[in-house]
Image (tube, rainbow, N blue to C red; front, side):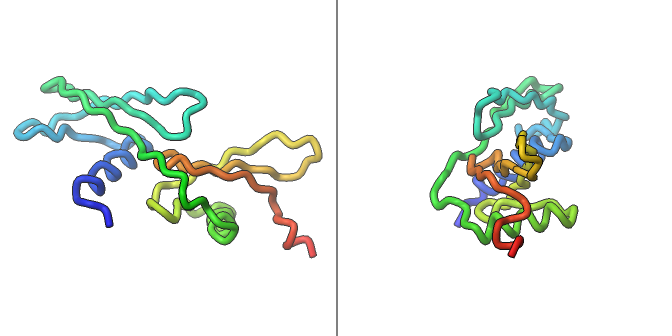
Length: 134
């Protein structure tokens, strides 16, 4: 069970991830915050820095890397089906939107990397899956 503080941190992470408006959390301020993505290219989790335009408070917003338990085949299939239906698939562990990255495949088969930028879980998959070809 997440604490209120963890839920609020996750909510702020989601807003930063989806480029939504963030407001300052300093009591009495409530100013708009400018969010900058400081994620390294090879990082598994996103890191943001938010600076208040009024009081200049700086907040570091980052994911919480967790790899265990890994996604199972059923979860990956459910996320892929949601993606194919043009819904936003989410991580089954923390409800963060999943990013699908198309990978180069010389045999012209669909190959994807699924990423959760909050917990750092990732997987690679072929589409359609082998069991669908039977």
